[in-house]
Image 1 (cartoon, rainbow, N blue to C red):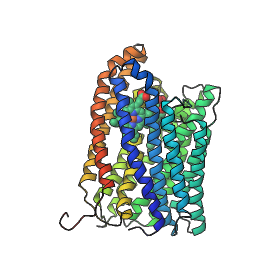
Image 2: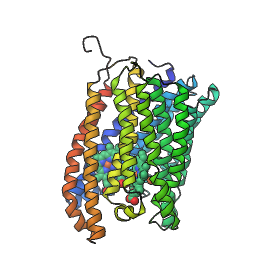
Image 3: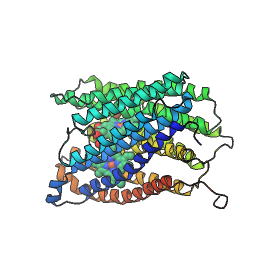
Image 4: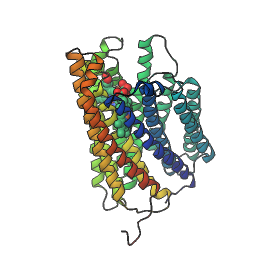
Amino acid sequence: MIAYQSQKVSYAYFVVALLLFPLQVIVGLWLASNYAFTMPQGLVNVFPFATARAMHTNLLVLWLLLGFMGGAYYMIPEESRSELFSTKLAYLQLVLLVGAGVAALIGFIFGWTQGRPLLEIPFALDLVVVAGALLFLFNIGATIIRAKNWTVLQGTLLGGLVFLALLYLFGIPFYRNLSIDWYYWWWVIHLWVEGAWELVASALIAWVLMKITDVPRQVVEKWLYVIIGLFLFTGISGTGHHYYWLGAPKYWLWIGGIFSALEPVPIALMVWDTFRNVKERQGKIVNPVVWLFVVGCAVYHLIGAGVWGFLHTLPQINYYTHGSQVTVSHGHLAFFGAYALLNLTLFYYCFPQLKGFERFKQGAGTWGFWISGIAMMFLGLAFGVAGVLQAYLERILGLGFMNAQAQMQFWFKIAIGAGVIFLVGVLIMVVDLLALKPETAESG
Ligand code: HEM
Ligand code: HEM
Ligand SMILES: [Fe+2]
């Protein structure tokens, strides 16, 4: 049961996010087919790989951000103990962002793109996104300021969101010098996922843990200070792991290597803290599946971002793996573990309350978690093997790109297999959440 009526806006954000997620995955399957099989040229001419890739990644960023925003609109009223400043503005913001998203997807098909991976959307749409982001920050900020009940959790969330919005601005201009252009491109890409988003994630995870256990607020907040300090310290200096080969000064090899190697530390602390809080639950859990997602998210975050990131972060290794399918392997495991699972945790925690009941049947959520989680591991491993093969064939044996690709096709076929199973897991969760019903006496 929700305590504040305005929390309901989060439902609309969550539903849109849940619909975009399977769409993103289907486009992913199409992408993998492009690698696994030789497509007829006529098809490639009308629907190029780069167009599908832009759809896949932009859909990802859009649904994840809508989920975070919905999560913020759910959490802030409870934390600030007041209704949101304006639900109308919140809906207007959703319309703007979804409108920009739809326009971008259609635009990509017709070649309306800036071309830079992940930041493809054209300047005009950037302005709409900025307007949406400003509305969001204004609404959240005004709610907090008006309510005057500051907490560390709100501060962290708001800090992360402001940082996130500011960084986006660096990706808007185009610099004619490509080294400089990529230099700032990474301010958005790296400092988002390894900086701003980590702050948002820490605040949301800490809040969910606090809500579903008996752990006192002071304990959660003390831990947040440490984690956030470490995230900022290692994440910001760790940007250097992207400056090895783009024409930046040589000292980045050292800075990037050493500090990014420390990035798994705050992530490991998050796992440790999650387990510590789990022990505090004292019989309070209502929906065990929410636990499964919180713990799963923490562990998968450590594997995908921490372990898989560490594997290729030292310049001695990155020299061989840079921009190969090893990177793609890490990109999938990290995004899924850290941010897709975080969103799913929020959905499973918030949905029953938004729909006005406490307990629901846990079966589908549990199946969805395991099927998607294991299938994503296989998908990541298939990309990983293809990537190691690629690094060996291209960078040690010196084979040309297409000759190496021919040897990798088998692993992309495996990726399609894992991807289809992954899609099944995703659909189970989406249908389960959208149709979530209270558990009745007989069904329990
Ligand atoms: C949740 C956090 C993370 C996410 C979502 C994430 C995601 C990604 C993605 C999508 C890329 C590919 C970007 C591109 O070239 O298009 C990438 C690259 C990279 N990531 Fe992460 N990452 C995370 C954390 C980490 C951590 C903690 C480390 C190091 C310990 C790391 C190390 C790297 C490195 C070295 C590259 C560059 C690979 C190359 O040279 O091709 N990442 N990451
Ligand atoms: C059926 C499932 C999926 C398949 C088959 C798939 C396949 C692919 C392929 C083939 C690429 C292009 C790689 C390249 O440019 O060489 C890609 C890119 C990407 N996908 Fe997926 N994908 C799937 C699901 C997902 C999910 C669930 C996420 C996130 C949670 C995700 C995140 C990404 C990211 C971040 C990139 C860019 C990676 C980079 O730049 O290194 N994908 N995907
Ligand atoms: Fe990075």
